[in-house]
Image 1 (cartoon, rainbow, N blue to C red):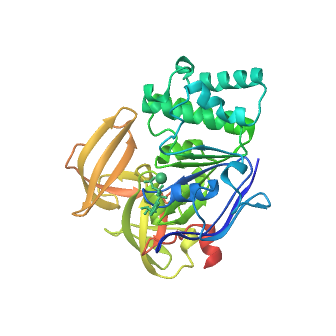
Image 2: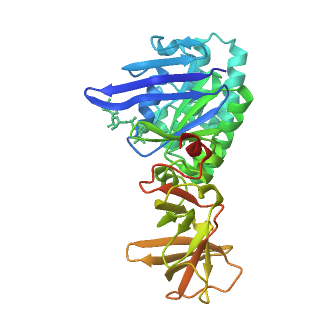
Image 3: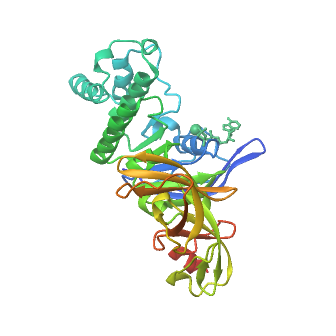
Length: 361
Ligand SMILES: Nc1ncnc2c1ncn2[C@@H]1O[C@H](COP(=O)(O)OP(=O)(O)OP(=O)(O)O)[C@@H](O)[C@H]1O
Ligand SMILES: [Mg+2]
């Protein structure tokens, strides 16, 4: 129930600048995910929003209210930390009740709400145990219940599902999403797991070295990544070199395609990213990028082919398994689905197919 606006945020640890001039706006009731490699600054930014980190520059707002100097406990935040710090001397039930007690909830209502969240997190059977007698995944769910039960304005979650097995992860992520939408909690969610990010988020910010590389919907980020780093980080991408000549994208082996959107761009070297499902294998001397099938994984509906294009570039190609398998060591050619692939400048820093790249051009 609160917009979060961050303007020109700066974070330094000593002389080490971890975040320099970061700007972002997180919408009311949005589930916003920070995704990026280890050490890129996700936890740092989350702790700045929570009030647990000093801020070396910039302004943080919840709606119109500047919160830079507001004490953490005044911010009506629910938090689940990376190391799920729950109170060791309180039972599971007391941990979950904690925030409600502080908010002076009536006893009957407190019990009812606590029971609801203990049950949803599947920890009701351990309600009277101390945390030391729980597994890591169970403790993590106590932390989740404790954060959600107070129905905060802002929920901050740092890898909240990292200790859970695959099945529980799926159940919990659906529950988080449901509560978040029901109650309308603006949520900042941190994860390494790009599939989890895609499944749960309204918006994703892909970060690298303290800088947001691309902020968009899961679909936008997957289909039209802003740069090669984002293409590589989200899903699987193969990269091949090409040249833009008179509006045509020219690959090796005389394979070229026309892309309407590039017809007025200047001749240049390109990096093309092609997802495994965006290649088409052709045989019988049809034109394409030539390669040799090195390895095959048959997975029922689909088959994954690993195809060597050159000594230092082997690409992954996924085809429907409808046709007969192509044996290893067969020479083939690859064509691309030209409306799906992404085309970057030589350094991989700009996607030439994005409208925003035309605006800046
Ligand atoms: N208290 C600290 N003092 C000094 N440097 C720190 C401190 N906390 C974090 N850093 C540094 O700041 C950078 C960002 O750290 P941060 O914890 O925000 O990364 P992260 O994106 O959350 O990574 P991970 O995915 O591994 O949790 C790292 O280089 C880290 O070493
Ligand atoms: Mg972290």
